[in-house]
Length: 515
Image (cartoon, rainbow, N blue to C red; front, top):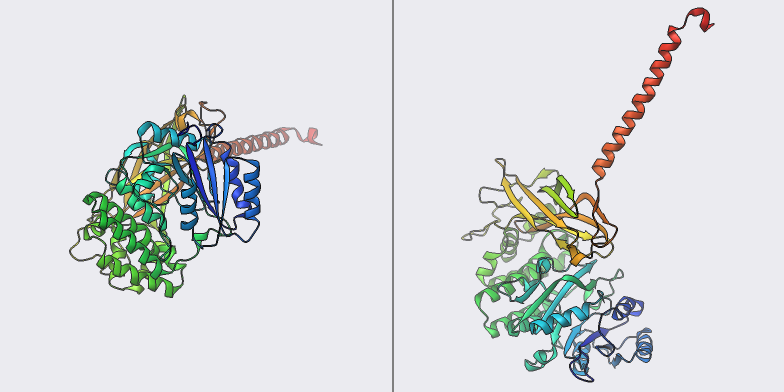
């Protein structure tokens, strides 16, 4: 389990800054990693904390020989402490973790075994989000030979992964320091994905819990400066251009940055909740990037809503962007359970779903594109396709927030009035779910994907498993309410019946008896 007699299998590098008690979940999780003594080490690289973090780290190191602490001058960003931690790391593999995140049980052992078994340069473990988004489509299934062309690797551009140390050294891969500071992990990951000989995705076990602190205290959580941020994105695009990857890989990266780093900031609540002058700066930067650096095929390949926003941003139509955002915040997914049944340990759920804008069903034109409240929103000369519309069924463990996509038989049914209805039937075997570790309370959700939306709708089902491998017990509030209504009717009918019978006996008695 180690790379040599005194070499740990995995080095965990953690940059810290004024984290205080937010470090506790990570520290607690380290003892549950399934590696033998000496199988891992943790290097805390403290970026000049001014609270009691240095003292806490020194106490950890004094109590655990697998922990080391680097006390660094304050740099203001994670790149420098990560690089310094990497230089000190002795492990065959290196995992970069943040100080307010934590590991799932046995995560490092499973990640290392996957890397060893498949001779991987990079292993991406399933991520669980806490008050922040994490990739979902990437973790639909295990992938042991993933590339930018055959898998949605570009959905995961953070550095919270297992890397072969010799791979990083061979290619001189380090986090960029200095200005611009933003997107430092994107720049490293773009090069890493393009250079790696094998990348694996371990989706069947929760490996990394990615959290946003309630006090918004993450170093990178502050609102970005648009000029600096998009200068950093240009640097990432330069890396792709320098490596000259195959067209499919290049387009995946361009489309990812176009959707996530550019256009998502100009739609819906993200636009409406930001200062107006900041949004104008972002729109200006995005408009220039779309025209100058983003491949036309990348713009043509994103879903319709993104193409619309790219078109409006490139034309500087701020009023229309705001009008579209005000409308889009009303778009919701609506879903219903048509039927469900349990046979043994297998649950089958049939779901129907659609999108609504406010109180009205969302309508689509003859091309399958959404009818929008903005004139001339479709760019000239671009044929947009609304393919890929579907509804997934997702089951989530309430205790840990783990999510699993269920296999579905899905159809999409357009109606004459422009509405679109999705129907999906999902099946889940609780004896096999999460490798048989199905104990807990599970919530069922529908995820409607269409035209650039991916929206969740809660379904009125709760599934409880009292033990791993045990039969599921489904709680359906609709059936409970129906039983309550029937019970109320029975009680009412019996009460009314007794009153009626009592009244009948009283009036039937002779007058003399009543006296």
